[in-house]
Length: 374
Image (cartoon, rainbow, N blue to C red; front, side, top):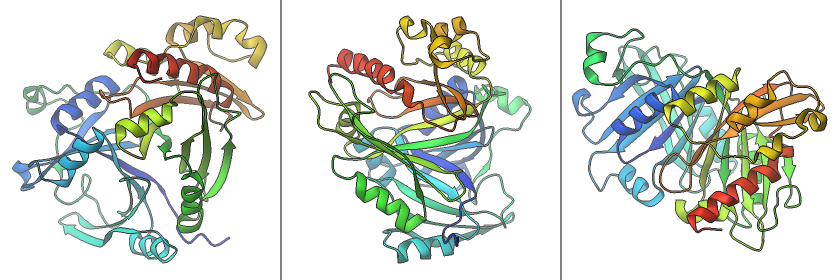
């Protein structure tokens, strides 16, 4: 089958934030990322400061505007700190842009080339759900630290400059790559975005969860998982369903002021160690009742992890015909109940923990009730 929009991988996720320096400290100290690159006033960037943080194959860019009227500042004012750009590495950014816009995608950034002493960097972008952009990045001819305009921030080994900066060096908490990125859209908009990814980006439908599958006594939602032709890029899309009370998706849409990225799932090969380190650092996770772990192996079959440790940390387990997975979800990582992270470890299963939906969403509803939003 001809793939008109081939994608290599997630290149990076860019967050628009109110204070990029402080956000970089958070991701460094609490989630184990290493700060690798920077642009700002010192490098000649007069309107934006950005920090690149990396762990495994995950790359986040944290950007802030340097004046109140800058679009990044306006975004942070409207949405709070959150994901603004999902960047995908592609073999040919111009081709990806032309193919997607020819099929109905709305242009956000026309094909652009930037060059420095490390080579040629090419990118373009289309409009995604809400104010989120989908950016095509072509870096096969670029050998710099990240992109033109960025300089290395810290070396891989602590130096006097690193120590004087006050930002400690990290070896990480074991996060390997981005497993999937989840978007929330308004009631009635699901079909539109499924069609968008299918027709403009050559994605296919991987999973469909209806409001009977994802429901509690009080609320429900619908979720459809779209993936690219290789299966490397997975983007589940959530839509609220009509229910007795406000669903988690409706709460998100209210505080985010519209659609956007709800959570980023990061993969690890040792979820117990990863979550233990994150909890020690101060990350808070959604808590599951201990009764969830009663007769866990009788319900799901034998797993290789100690049940008592999973219960202590609050890690969920699900199994399908291909194997099992382990997963856990953080509390929102900012004051608005919007963006959060999922940590996931897979043992054969490529599912999304559908067996945990009810327990998880009941736990989320308990958090909503505490916030006065259920």
